[in-house]
Length: 449
Image (cartoon, rainbow, N blue to C red; front, side, top):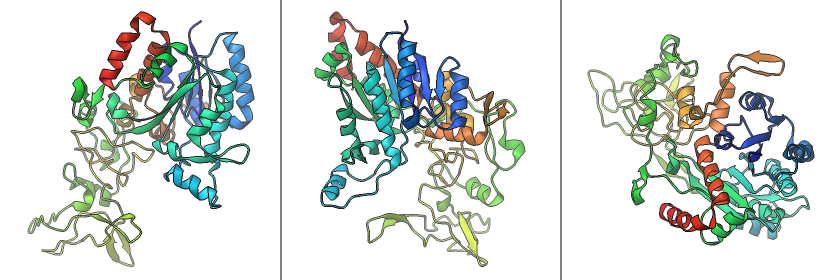
């Protein structure tokens, strides 16, 4: 029987492509949002999808998985729980305050890891993978007994003693993704061969393949230019130029005239907040640029006194502004808003806001627009894994292609399948490598990590 896996908090099932790419059969997925579950059903027609709150269905997940395994062992459980409630505060500080009686209000979303751990403890897969934001390390949750505990420590407590593992902060650009995206990969295993290697110092994440400076014989980071140059040009000035006639996903929102002018005059690697005078009789280039400074509380805030009119001729600068009571003022925004991406670097972290020009570093490096859906899918490595967006059905309706609002959300929230492809290859290697090959694994991994 081929190795089998299950996926929890699956979203649209994007990360799971990294499992199935390596021959892992996907027994089931669990996703509470019906629209995302419809995409899972499309992409994994042989996998059962539990479209329900995991608190309600985790016993059935265990029962169904055992039935499908027919006495065989589960190879991997991949879980990507919601990250919106993960804390940015230090875990030590939070625990210290709790001990002093300053009990915080816990985010219930963070407790969703508890039923996932119940599934893991019952099924005891060879490998358990959690993917989340780095802040997960600092997150304190309330366990079922009402005790405050660090979420990583909870994982250790809930898993049987046979497991070893830890959490790793991973920069996805170090694995060839053309995007800066830091994630926390938490891995535990009970595989005996992998445990021996882990105890000898081998990391459970795969060796890096890329490096910012191409050090240690690694490849350089993949830059945006390599990825985007293959797409046909688009322009957000009107619908005719904003939509490709060849690729339904290669399309961008049409910008209103003001925003289009701000972006049209934004130079390479710059923000529209720094645009200079475009009055042909003036063209003054030394107007004060946008900036930020820390307030008395230590919070970094964008300046509100950035000039909107040319210091030399008085003409309106093509900078983002709002108008109230007939008066124009500079728009509130960080120095990274309305800013072009760099052609020579990996993309900044994509979020569900990648179609909005006011989001950080989301303007196309050269063209007057944001990224298209097709480009974003490429930067997330989604389109490299035969991921499908239609035809789907949900809530009694049928769609030839998923709504673009759904595509946007799935792309922005997804874990890149490229990394999980490499991760799956690595755990398979650690699991199955014979004694005679251990020395080569050790030397290879230590040289690359």
